[in-house]
Image 1 (tube, rainbow, N blue to C red):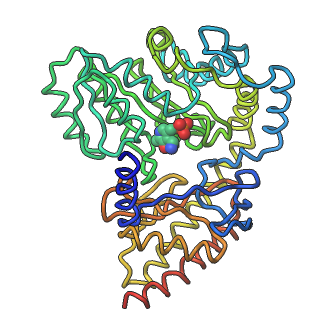
Image 2: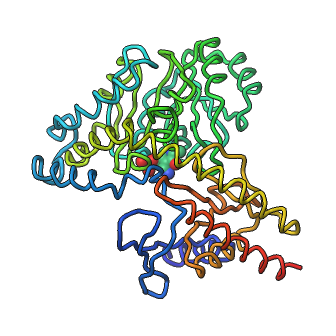
Length: 409
Ligand code: PMP
């Protein structure tokens, strides 16, 4: 019975062109990556889908640091942090992050998690107790939404970037603890939340601002400390979550906040207490990643990213003018996440397949990840792309646009 039930659900997913596929990579995450196709044949593709925004995942110093970490600490951590899984490398990573955020958050301390998903669940469930009301931004990442579902707090959603609506909701709330929860950079749109305005509301209404900076950390700010540095925010009311699997090129995540908050997470967050700590070799390598992010490498790579972003935006704007019959729109992004909104699920998958036949991999993103009718190519840029790579993408998109315009005419 269960199998028939699941099979009919899978058939329904397929009927809506929503089936997802796993792809196997055979080389490091990089703009040119060897990926096995559905036919089982491995090909080098030009990738515009990774969140390795600074191109650090394949940096030789990261690979060396991982190997060195493995020689010092071996493989896994062997236990949850409070049992015996916490190493000096974990402490060094947390201390570095606390230093980085000290100018922004008084009495800052950091606590590590294995993934950003876990860190978001931890913060939202631990702080969102029965005394709390959570004000959750409409386009938040699934992990924040799942956190609100698991929490005991009352949950109120506010519209995307709708500061006026949020103000009204905060003004009308009588909750003892008020938590504003938002992505900093919206993962499927690439725009940045109005964090200064949200923080001003937090100050005015005695609320706390939980910011998921998964896509800003490493990318935004002069030293790559993310959206908090970008806006130069300062407040004890900031709770910042970052993942280390994207621009930092490795894995893991952190929460940095006032030390009372991180101590409370350590004492009460179930997915911290009851889950094996990340491998210490990864933590060891993160220290090298941090050096690269804040040093000259990071600065040059962030500058290159900005140049590529400008090249892609103006190239797509020109392309859309050449193909007025297509309903495509470039999302107004300020980050390396540059979605091209295509509309229908079948159309976006058709476009992605055409690009792949030309040797490019750009993923099509469909509902429920994005709203119905707004299926899109999620183009992501990495600092290790070249201007020629972006030109190749633009030429492939142009060819696909001409074909699709002809078919739909
Ligand atoms: N937050 C956002 C906005 C994300 O895009 C992601 C990853 N897709 C996460 C959190 C989860 O981070 P991780 O991949 O480290 O679990």
